[in-house]
Length: 279
Image (cartoon, rainbow, N blue to C red; front, side):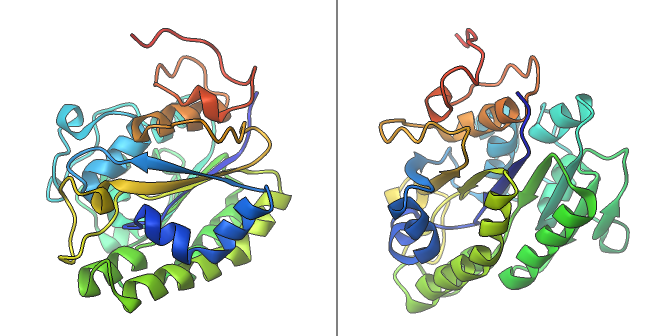
């Protein structure tokens, strides 16, 4: 079974902040349109290693992407590479580190900011390189990609929540209000995506601490939200998905054969996934 999938990664959004501040997403859960899970991030709780973990299902200690300053292409099978192998169309509105991981490295803004290349793993991309790039613009970029290219897999990655956390910390009005604003901007498009039949996953790479940073083992650094929206999800409140299972779950939703990635089968309706031995 093949579905179109949108994965939203809200950079730096702690689980409790999502519960308290993401009013529209929480409204969807109250109305039975979405289900929220608590997911623990891999370590280190840093962005580039966790982008790789989410998109490949490989922990940083095994992928080799162990901190933010490793600038090279991923050498793992990712959602993007597996989707392209199957002839699917890929797109991303995202921070330029995704371009470096899955397209060309190092990032060249003139060459890579606007990507439209069928030979790349991310075929259609609108990439940005300033952490303050407005989330409102980022969601608009994502919607333009969706309407223009009708991708099978679309990655949406805004940065303002993380940027606010680094400026003011977890326990700050700036961080919380930035989360609220991002939720409001996202709400403009989520309803359209739902009506169009997309299977949607909204999560975060890591959280934030009171030292205006992240990277360690504190719960507020590691505990992140995962909202799932769509008819292919079981919406089983007892499910306990792991961050490394998100890649395989996306692959399963896309109908990819032989992806050999661990997946959170309890997230999906019975019969959608194929039993595999991941020992």
